[in-house]
Image (cartoon, rainbow, N blue to C red; front, side, top):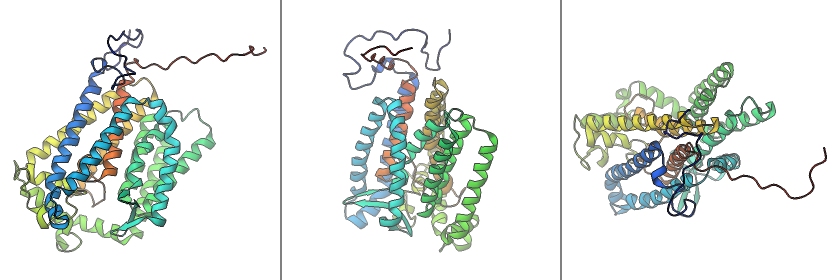
Length: 407
């Protein structure tokens, strides 16, 4: 008799639940019946998002006071987005993965159209058209589309050997067009993350090695071509190799980030006491927020953050290994890779281990679109864990009335 990693025996009937009906309550199933991984994930996500709000407030108050005459300006806006994002997180937990997978294809196509719209009517900031402005709200489609890339990638790759060749070519083409549209903005970092995410999910699904090698080679050539075509990307790569050569010019951002990290020392300057954020470090509340964190919490705090990401990744992979279907397993792998992988890439950029990119630090960097996408991905991961219990089995289909079929 086999048991899943959560300790539930799928061969046994679901246990009887006393008290209010789970369907009528706030939770999809009673909290006492949640797997340990699901409970732990909810706690980790809560800690991650609250820590992120604290760090974002520390990183942004000086700029907010100087530019908006309100030190809590960014805190208020991020707090509103955080409440909305937690609502989406809970919706993801309470909605079956089957429904999410059914909405993945149309949502991905709408997301691709929105990315294309940024090239025509998008708001341009620092030479990149990545935002659609709707009144007071700025929409960044490249962030919002990420969870649906995970869902649709899982839907396609889990049935790769059973779907027709035309369907395979169609979705490979759609994924490729989406990546090309993101590159056109230009946004090399998000395009590379999207391609790498799909590649890792395809690897986990067991797709043919020749196809994976061909896709990896094509992606690498595409990245090199983008760097050669776009001057600012080429400058970022050369300045990354030796930022001190032009410390007041192209290497300024990375140099200030490294100075902030180095100034933190072993234990850090203390929460709110970063000096680099006051006037020296650009983009301190978004792409380079880790530098502020490292200056205020030091080597020990940075190590604890990396340990936290490692724990989150471990729990996410435990959920993936306990899933009983390939689709669920790939969703769990994709969501974990998206959250932990993007975090590692952001930290690598801030610490000078990678060329400067525009990837936010999930649940920590300022930005409502990134918060929504990150908490949706986290909710899908928790939902994968809940569905390993077998407590929410699909209802039997009703038999159609009418005469029996002939033969």
